[in-house]
Amino acid sequence: MTRSQSTTTRYSTPAIALHWVLGAALVALFGFGLYMTDLPFSPQRLKLYNWHKWAGVTILLLSALRLLWRLTHRPPPLPTAVLQAMPRWQVLAHSATHGALYLLFFAVPLIGWAYSSAAGFPVVLFGLIPLPDWVSPNRELAELIKPWHEISAWTLAGLVLLHVAAALKHHWVDRDGLLHRMLPGRD
Figure 1 (cartoon, one colour):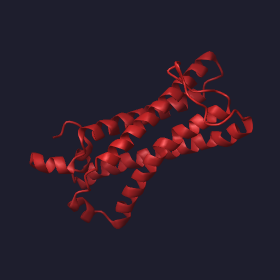
Figure 2 (spheres, rainbow, N blue to C red):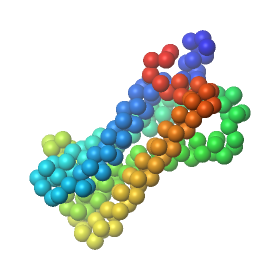
Figure 3 (cartoon, rainbow, N blue to C red):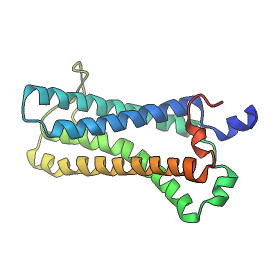
């Protein structure tokens, strides 16, 4: 493949960097969230919850940057050979999964922020920048919102696993080179 061909089928360097940084951050934050929820109430647990909120806001900002990049820099289309080899349901699943991932990149941290606000625990980014509450403190509302943060986070984790499984299937089973479009340093 020549350099001119590779630039039309590969994602741009900023898109690749945002993909991998956001992916690593999501995996780390999900694992961190699982760990901290099982801790007994203590100053350490409160500190970890604050870090979790900071990371969630950071993911929200990264997601906004990634969406802005995607809206202003059209991603490369799926290669014709890959499209022709994929059953129609896989093409639809590809589009639906990407759309749902983008939706959840925003929904999970925003729901968490709303829950924190309703529970009466403000988000103070890096312990320095107080962020506005999404809603007024309200215990009943907090209890309604809380499960939605968990449900949306688990849904996001499931979609990330599906995305990874599909990419690995294309790489190791189909051997169609699709994964190479998103790997760094492959120009």
